Image 1: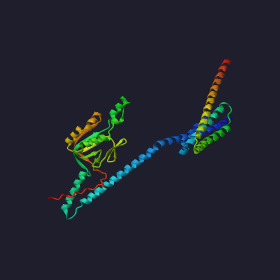
Image 2: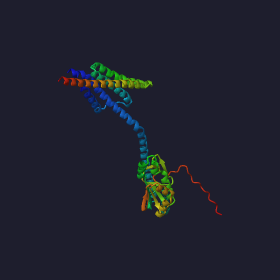
Image 3: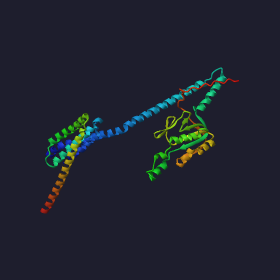
Image 4: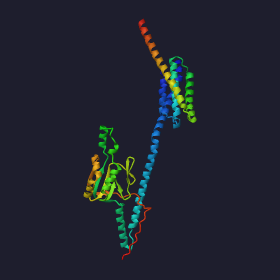
Length: 250
Length: 124
């Protein structure tokens, strides 16, 4: 009994110390976790929100365009011939500006990061290992596209249709096309004469360069590829057509 | 003899089960308080080993030290002086010196017991 009473104070102290210890540990780990993720999380949230917003806006553009199309395609009594020819013209213009889903023969170039090469290089000589040498860069895509652009009638990278205003650029570790993030493997689809397109790629400097670096590049001729329509904006705010004065015919 | 250890384990378990929500701002002060509490505990253990243990002194020291340490750190933060370093230093030094005494006491007790056993055997 006396022994029990003797040890009571230190037991109480021990109990409280244990409580304090665990809550302090908890608070400290919470503090560490927060410091690590807090800042990044807000940035990630902002990016995700903006991307979701872009998607919604693209859908709006899409639905508005189909509405316009419906109105344009409405049967109008009288002036039938004129309207039909105008509608044909609109269709042609849309096809040329990349605003319709298209399909046709062509080639598919698949370009991927050299994962196995990077792995062996990292193991064999880690001092010289530079991860930059083994990933696909925006410039590779840009040069390949440039090589075939003249011969292709329609182009797309990973289902992002390339039009006159399309951009291919590097943002940190991702490549952005039409301001959308893409991830490897990159799939360049081109509609046109498959033989000519393949030749153009095979003769391009970039293809040699990629092959010399052992990057996995494959070119396949395809009978029928389909490319999506360009979903971005085509608004022109500043450009005006210069009106050429017609020379007087003598 | 085993009551304090059982108490410590129960305390840790209680703390793990019932999460006492501590605002993150006070996490630092809590850490200082834990250090002070540990220092008091070590003092208590040393007291038990040296037979100079007094429960009232232990408990009063325990509470005042933990509260004062936390308060000192808090005050220091508001004054712009890292006063918590003073608490860490003082309690750290005392903790280690107490640990040293405890080690010596335990070893001495162990040796004394062995000697008694040997002498007992001699007399057999």
